[in-house]
Image 1 (tube, rainbow over the protein chains, first blue to last red):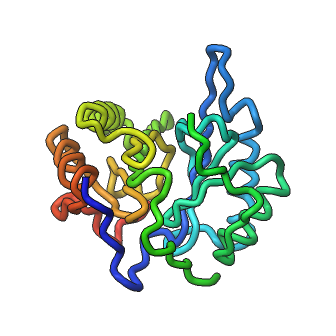
Image 2: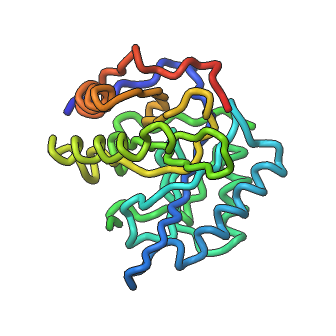
Length: 119
Length: 119
């Protein structure tokens, strides 16, 4: 597999930032992000982004996703194009991700999912 | 809103490439990707990536997603971190995305969603 090619300098994607929340809801007794407030976090993020005027093409998209396969770090969300992964706990964490990262491009270091965390 | 900060040179994300398929299934009579083979395309992509040995951390993740809000270009998928958007039609399109882009990093120009296409 070859390396990723760099995006041309200055090229802007359809969204400046695209955050995906795992909303996977396992019904087989195993843990999943939906058991840990993922839907509420998604709703909070979506509302906050909209209220801040950040939503839309050229700006931010808050997206539902299925399992992101880093379940041991759940509940989890990922921001692209940066590829920054967050493990959040409560609504204030979501508010900080919106204000710091989605609005101002500053990564919230304290919420980063440790790199070794996988499924 | 500030500009995105570039990823540090050489830093690799948890996945080298992460493709999200819109699987939104509207039941209100409106069109949606699920009415146009999105689930079958997702399954095809997932199987092909696994069969090619591309699946996993440091490699490729094929992901379910909710509405990506570019419905006029559906059925649709997006590849990050590149932020490359595809409008596909059939299984051969999926196979080409896997072989060209997900495996070899070569964008499939003929399948690119036109930049003006939104909801």
